[in-house]
Image (tube, rainbow, N blue to C red):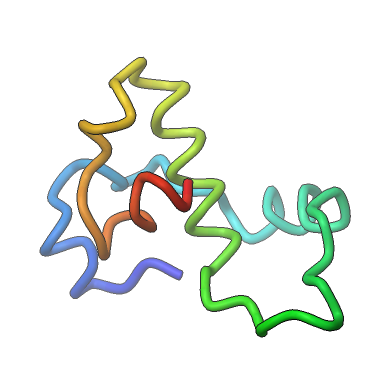
Length: 77
């Protein structure tokens, strides 16, 4: 979830463009579940989706994805 500290680091990359809680609740059942035998997930799936939608919305290249903590690392997204 976005905090004021994250917004200060990111600037305008995510302001007003992140998924709302209602939007994420609609998408959450469609996300693949974590593997029961593997390590627990360390990536926030809502933040991951925000990164994907940022790439699609802006048309930027993967390597130009804003750095963490704005979004997870490019290879993760």
